[in-house]
Image 1 (spheres, rainbow, N blue to C red):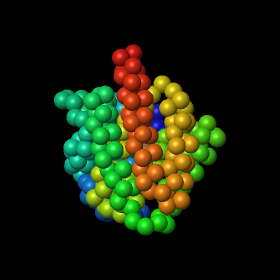
Image 2: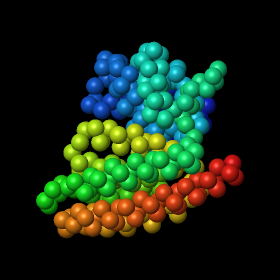
Image 3: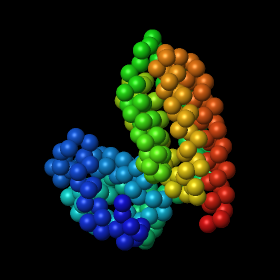
Image 4: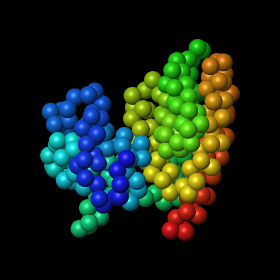
Length: 241
């Protein structure tokens, strides 16, 4: 992972060139939307922490795209509230306010619970959900809480993905990428993430048993607990900064 926010180099970002969604070189596909996909995924994975300045020179070089294409991608991600432009200073990854967290969880409650509520008759295809849970469990055993955090994001993306709706998937990618901005401020990621590993497993077990209604009830309590815990800790952390 790269070093300081203002000291990123093209070498630090060299692996970005391999992250096009379908493997096609970004220089040839060349659209701002595809660049935005790569950067959004990197933000969701914790590669660019909140408050970090994004270097046009380094990123355009790593992705082999023009400055104009990159600026358009920045504008798209600014509309998604992931980036912000500071006059005469450049483009930065946003630092969320507590109010942002409250709204993010409001959307998550509506979308994720509705995805489970709308499931038809079992069995359900839980391949992606199970894979995310297993990845999180392995990461916890390795004391790798950054990977555990990413796995948790993927778990919730996969839950929403059970709706089989491309529009829902797109919405959740944006919402969860924005949520990830808050995780960087947590003083103790293990304390935050560890209790939810077993709850993720319980939800996937309920779904495997065909109990979508039970899984939805568990998810609703889960999201409320997570919102309250994260908002309180996040507010304390921001006050102390």
